[in-house]
Amino acid sequence: MAPQPLGSLKGFAVTFRQIFKKPITQQYPEFKRPVYPRFRGRHRLWRHENGLEKCVGCSLCAAACPADCIRVVADENTATNRVSAGERYARIYEINLSRCIFCGYCEIACPFDAITLGNDFELSEYARDDQIYTKDMLLAEPIKRVPVADGLLYDTPIPYYRTDS
Ligand code: SF4
Ligand code: SF4
Image (cartoon, rainbow, N blue to C red; front, side, top):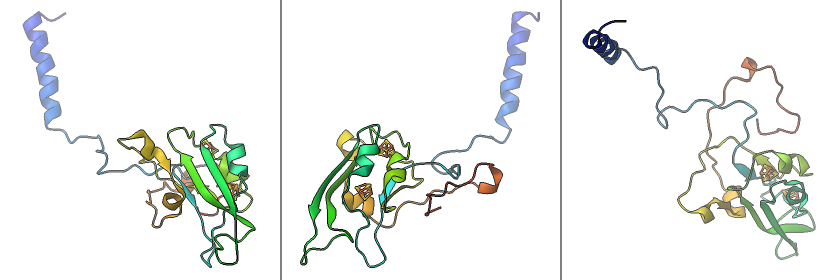
């Protein structure tokens, strides 16, 4: 073993050499690593082309949710207030993203493709209540687009129920 001063000098030499090397780290948020093609992130609600909401307030997504974080309160469409294409619509639709485990069961359970999970993962908030996403937030356009890795690099297919991929 080298005597202590010599050992220290060797250590400093290693450190010194690293100073002139180009860093291999990628800085976030300047660089955003593309997400996996089947990555599940922030939800969104969809409308039909005619502007009516696809959600009919059936609560199947809420029933399927293992984290119990979806709240749906339905109401009847009327001739003067038609919101969705069905008999009923979601008067209140909320997802508490602080409880969500991003399993995608809500997306699979929905019979009308009204809700899907996108790939936005930047969901930090200062207040816990801000993690509750309302219907307006979930319907809002445009949603944040996150770079997605080339699907051909992976051997798992995009699932049949993903129409927004
Ligand atoms: S992704 Fe899973 S946990 Fe999150 S809201 Fe949908 S069903 Fe619930
Ligand atoms: S998102 Fe789909 S499953 Fe959930 S309440 Fe609306 S129509 Fe029903």
